[in-house]
Image (tube, rainbow, N blue to C red):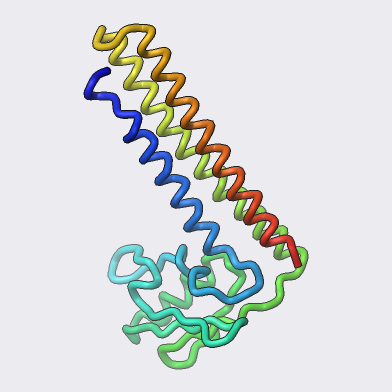
Length: 186
């Protein structure tokens, strides 16, 4: 096996896509307030996109309320805009540098919208995993073409890459099904 091909690296990159999906799904609300709901929110601040938790303290003072204490007064509007634009269905009430987010009960229509968002996140994760698979297969084809590995090794390693891909896609499907149940159960 050549030093240019590393199945462990391919697995690590695929697991990164799955970890990213877990993070994004954690941000979808299920009816109860959670500080992790705001983790995917990116704020246009200081000339770049920054995670909300680098600009403010997020806390949960009540089961249906999230409090966001913005550190820099000049960033309050940007944080408010990012939360509204985040497609979480939350509208902040601003009191000075504190934004209060009341978590409404989820109606059936909103639950279905959240499921669609979850599906979109899962599909993006699957695409990312498939891109990693394609990269790995391209490296194998190049190694075989340059006679650095045999055709049999290329086929065997390509099979390993495909098994890894199938496992990751299966894990993504399980995460999606779990989140869908969580969103749809009243």
